[in-house]
Every structure is written in structure tokens, then in C-alpha cells.
Length: 107
Image 1 (cartoon, rainbow, N blue to C red):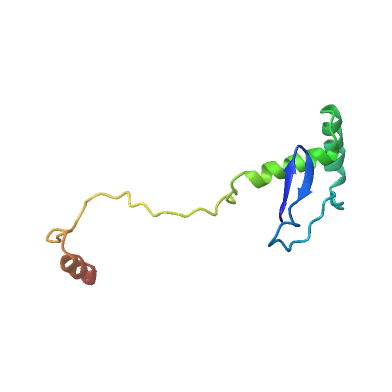
Image 2: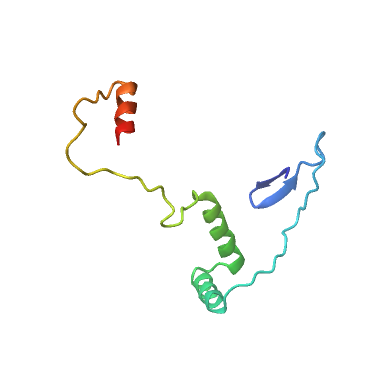
């Protein structure tokens, strides 16, 4: 959208040449379904901080949108690590593809 915020007020640049966006200059009203216990805690927290619930929700959204996305636990890439002993098989040259392919065919 072609609107900018300056000191808490929104102004629109849609009248500039080349802009065809529709701008809403007032704040949008939104209905949220919030768990009752969470709402009670949030209202109490906002009152203790002498702020509104709206300001607190806006701050929370800004923080969440600014933070990098979190990966769900257990969804990382599992790397297989060989912890055995021994090393290369005798006669296999690790610098030769042919030698490695031949050794792989033998197993």
C-alpha cells in the first residue's frame, strides 16, 4: 500500500501519478476470538502497564512479525554420523572414482 506513517498519523500517496491503490486512512476495526483466560490476563497486564489492550496487541504483532520464523521442534535435518573405527578398506584409493565405484560394487 502506498501509505506511510509519520508520528502516529497515516497519510496517503495514492494521489501521486502512477498510483492506483485504494487507501484506507482510518484504523480498521477487527474482531478477534481470544481465549477468556488469556483475555483476562492481557487486560490486567495492559492495565498494570497503563496502556490499552489494542496497543499491547499491536506491539505483540510487530514483535512477532519482526522476529525470524521459528522452526517447529523435531523438524530439523537429521544428519547420519558414522562413529565406527577402521577407516578405508585396503586397496581402495579415496582419490580415484573408479576405485571407489569398484569397492561399492563389491559390497
